[in-house]
Amino acid sequence: MGERPIRLDSKFSTPCAFWVPEAKDVVSTGMLLVDDDGITFTTAPEYSRDLRMADIASEISSIQSAREKLLVLHGFTGQGNCTLCQLVDVEHPGLRHFGLEQSIAAISYRALVCVIGVHFGGLTDKCFDSARYTFSGLSEWVPKATTEQWEPDQILIKIPHKEREIFAVCLHESHAEVSLKVYPEVTTSDLDGGRVTRSVPYVEVRSAGPECLSWYREVGARIENLFSLFTGTSQALETFFLYRGEDSGTVIERRYSHARPFSQLECVTCTTAELANSVAIWLNEPPRFRSVESLALGVLRKGKLFVETEFLSLAQALEGFHRATTQADSSFASRLSDLCQRIDAAVLVRMRIDIADFISNVVATRNFYTHAGGDPIPGKPSPLDGAEMFFLNQKMRALLRGVMLRHLEIPEERIADVIVRESTRWH
Image (tube, rainbow, N blue to C red; front, side, top):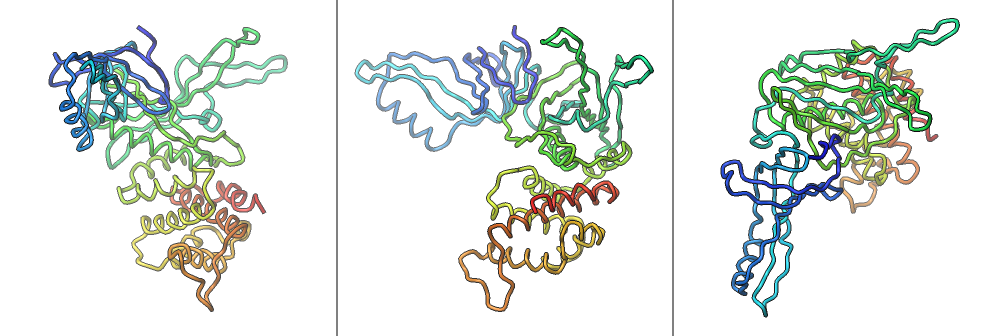
């Protein structure tokens, strides 16, 4: 049996057998393929000597009317037990010869998620106790697992046998426990055979009671968003493990992460206590905040957007964030004014944001593109375009990041230089 895939974006191909949990004796063998196109289970081809046009017409009609959907399949693969979730048949590959009345037919199913190592009842089956996640680029931001002691004639590096806990918090809404830990990994260099150490951070989430895969997927995605907000680069989930008693499962899923390299200049540095408090605030937010979170982090994490698309997304995110964090029923201009006032006036000056001009430009440009096809109204401020819109986007992006970090109770002195640089670096 081959080694179990580790990464969330692992790619592999393996012989397999799958069955519906309620009908264990009806088994379909075939190949499981995980690649850039997704997760595909293709059944082994079946041969028939009785091919008729009526059968083909009936098959085509059934395919066109409604593709078969399966909530879950249990199976066995070269990597061990396996569960596929949310399947739909996408193709019926094969060979048909009407003259000889013979055919070879198979079915290809596309799955949303593959979990190697365990069988369970699907996305909403509450059977897991905890999950563990690792993220790209995070090791350069969190404290190291190893410690260095500088002495007159040597440098002493201490590598602990156990992981180092950075923080642990309990969420008052769900009573889940969230902890950030770092463990040392020691490997041998391929170049000179020497020892190489690195710190590998991971987040562990333990639910108050059994929870489902969907719940842990959402928590992982939200932590990914939070770390992206802090580091200023788009983080990506690298590994995602589920635990149920002594059993464990590795989650495989096709995701478009837009991950970017870590940059020290982009990240916000804070204390362990401040980070723990931010995690608690973030994961305790009510459902109405989460749609805004997805919108805001979606635009902050994507580096390549048309300037007009980026502007409209930022405008919508700023308006939505204000609506989600206040009870006030106000105009778009009033919301922008209130958001600007959440940042110190001296910092806004450094960001080159004049509140009156900024609001006028954002509102005029948003109105013009929201009601596309019209002409600028005489006597009203003209919408920005080209380079002016690009520079306005940088200010909006920095403001959005700044007010979100302040909402997480990060002191302004820790974010000022970062959002000033983000607002002005292209000027």
